[in-house]
Image 1 (cartoon, one colour):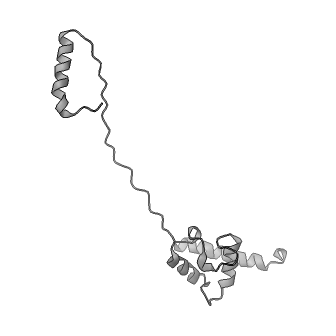
Image 2 (cartoon, rainbow, N blue to C red; image 1 turned 180 degrees about the vertical axis):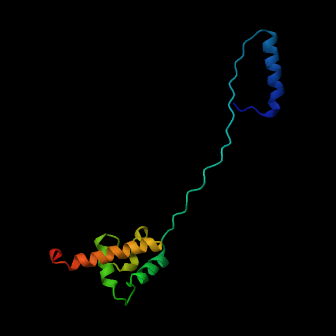
Image 3 (cartoon, rainbow, N blue to C red; image 1 turned 90 degrees about the vertical axis):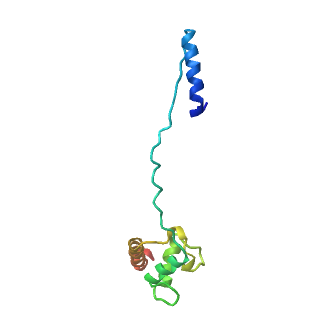
Length: 122
């Protein structure tokens, strides 16, 4: 039950009557603790179609650029695009959104190229 400030005089009267008639009254009160709300979670950058084009240009895999087919195969091998899809349909959850993430992808693409050219891969 919620007790309002306007109820306090009535409660005081009830306690006075209980004391007058020697009645034991037990009351348990709880007060809300006003803690600071937790900070909102940090916003995780979300990739967009513009981010995809930025990444493809940095990887030199935009239309007409030399790494387009290599990057397409890399993305397909990881199921980040469908079989016949172009790199522009890159799964947005997998698109790098920072320079550091892009550098990591670039390194993985370079290793993918080395692995594809190695004799044991053929």
